[in-house]
Image 1 (cartoon, rainbow, N blue to C red):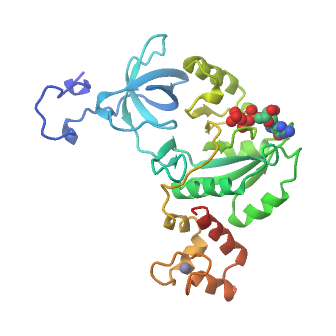
Image 2 (cartoon, rainbow, N blue to C red):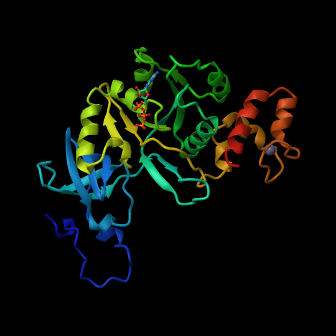
Image 3 (cartoon, protein in one colour):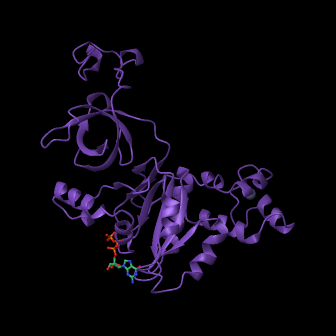
Length: 322
Ligand SMILES: Nc1nc2c(ncn2[C@@H]2O[C@H](COP(=O)(O)OP(=O)(O)OP(=O)(O)O)[C@@H](O)[C@H]2O)c(=O)[nH]1
Ligand SMILES: [Zn+2]
């Protein structure tokens, strides 16, 4: 073992730089790669070769955040035996990061989940009633993060999905509908081989759905509750679970609001490539909102190149900021 593999290398060496130079950094590339499945009070639970290894943060990455869904390299004791601890020595580059702020006055970003490529907005059709404002804000966060959003409408036994379908189909958002005993084949199809984060208001039936999709989710949940000494419902960490046919779902605790103060409105246009093309002809600094002077998007609608419905959907996303 080279001395550089010791986390404490350089500890008592005088340093001018606050960060070690690249050539002084230990090479951890041969260390095993694991996925962070839950976090509790500085302890990271990581799935490594089918076992759950508990780890703490290595010294060299002390300032780097680690979030659920992260792919990390582990060093130290990775046996997963009771009382043992491994160390997270490297956080691999993230493909995406979903963030939210507690509310819009709070500019503090809370990263919630790393490496998801899909986001399920789980919304009940009734009890609690759907809130389009919240759906729109989660959509905005997903577009900003480069994660494909989908709408999963639960409790279809209580109310019809028609109205929400009409509102969200023009956005190109895939819509899935569930009720007790309904066939989940379409849902499973969409989830398989992807990493999908589930977000929703408390009580929408997210746990019910997760338990149907991941047969041993109850066990995973129980393990986390045991660890935190609290019920899953009061846990603040997301929980990543492997799907039986491949891929992951990452369940997040029920949220009451979804702040997007960290999102720049301009980034929303990126999720509407058909509009972005026309917007190139807008006056400089155009925000494309309703009534914007000489907005090329209005012109595109006027001469039939763009549907009015599509522009209205885009503008609704913009309004999610106000
Ligand atoms: N009628 C009906 N009830 C449902 C359906 N899905 C879930 N429920 C009920 O809704 C309630 C809330 O379900 P949960 O799965 O605990 O909801 P949750 O979103 O996980 O809630 P939190 O854990 O608080 O975040 C429970 O009483 C479920 O039995 C459904 O499709 N139809
Ligand atoms: Zn414009």
